[in-house]
Structure formats: C-alpha cells, structure tokens
Length: 331
Image (tube, rainbow, N blue to C red; front, top):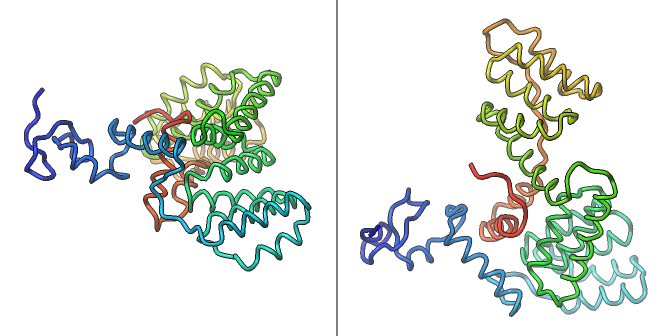
C-alpha cells in the first residue's frame, strides 16, 4: 500500500504508518526526530532503542548526559574498600564527593550499604544510580544481589537479563549474570515449582498486568484470571481477583462464590475476607461499594516513574524491560 505525504512535515513522502499519529503516514526523517515515549511499542522505535543498546555493548557510547565529576575518585574509594573492607573508612573517603546527581556516587553508597548488610538501603541507592544512568550495568548487577537478599526474585531475574544485554558475552558481568540466572533456574526446578523459571516470570508479569486492569476492565481481567486459574487451581490469588472482578461487574453471586473459594484456599486472606463482607451486605442489583483493592507491586513501573524530570531516562528504562525481559500481554 502506497502512503501519502508525511503528516508531520507535509513535505516528504510518508513511508510508514505512525501509531502516535493515529496510523497516519510519516517519513523516516520525522520518525527519527519525533521518537519518544509516545511511540509506545512501535516496531521502528523498538528497533532504534535496540540499536542504542547494541552500540553501548560494543563502544560504551550512550545517549545520556550524566554527571561524571569525581568518577575516578569514587572508583578509587571503591577499590580501597575492596582491598581493605573497611566501610567506615570508605564512607569518610566518599563524603567529599557527595552528589545525588552522580550515578557513581549513588552506586558507591549502594556498595557500602550492601557490605553493611543493609540490602533495602542498598537497593534504593542502586535504583537511583540506574535512574541517573539507565545503562549502568554494575548498578543493575548489584541491584540483583540486593533484590535476591530480599526475595524479589522477579525483579532480580529482570536485572540479570538487562546486565547480559548491556555487556557483551565475554564481559565478566555478563558471565556473572548468566551464572546467576542458571543458579536461579536450578534452584527453582529443585523447589518443585509448577512452571520453569522463565514461564513463572512471564505469568507473574501477566498477573501484575491484569491486576492493574481489575478496576478499568474487570471483564477482560476476569477472562485472564480464569485462564491462569486453570493451570493453578490451588492458587488463592485467582479466585480472590475473580471475586473482585465480579463484584465490580455487579455479579454478586459469582463474586461470593469466588471469594469463598479464595478463603477456603487461604483462610488468612484479609482482602478476600473484607471483599466478601462488602459483597454479602450489598443489595441485589445495586452497585457494590466499600471494596478493598488488591495491592499491586509493579516494580517496573515504580522504577520507570521514579523521577519525572528526565523523561529520556524513564523511557530508556522502560525499553530495557520491554526489549529483553518477559513482558505483560499487549492491550
């Protein structure tokens, strides 16, 4: 199909349909100059982002403007810490370079926190370092360590994949991340889990995706939970979520049935119990109120939206997840 003039510049001939312009034609020059978060998962935008990551892998060149002041001094502090293992001395040595806009300073603070066995604090420093420099492979790898210490398996799994795609196969960080994923896979298999690690991570992302949809499109979310429940009938999350979906849809009897099933599988599910109480006391055919929403920890969105003042960085982090890690189903 031949496209007409570029909708953006109205000068050159359009050669591709632009989702951000409602499917109207756009020329390659305007496509490149206008790229950003509005492009979503457009194939041309994804290809461009993949090229940027591949370029970094081979040349260490990246599109970000980052604070590199005192980078060498901070690296010296970390090297001394590795040699002497004195965190108090490292904190004193690092203090003159304190700067929360420096990814290297934030990373060093994370390393010190890790050595002090404060994994929650370390995680926050690594997350801030990554946000300042999305391609910071060392921060991603150390983040995976802090996450594993706190049992954030899905997030650590993603972080390891991102490390492997930011560094070439012969790089020591790539090798360490790959080895960590192999260890996680073996541990997961030995645990007797229903699914292999990768499939379990994909299902977890799907669960997050549809839990966020319960309030905006409860019927579609319910359809998804029914399919997932067929594979995991003993998982109390699915009937709990289904009960909430049916409550929002006004299907009182179905909501009661699913919420009772959730409580039979997990008697300690306080949210299912509260929602069952709200549904049971509601009048037939009336809107069900006082429902308790399901808490959704979407770590990807939390990191992507961590700071709003550098949309280029936020978008780069979103694409790192979208390019290389199991993603939720497309709308």
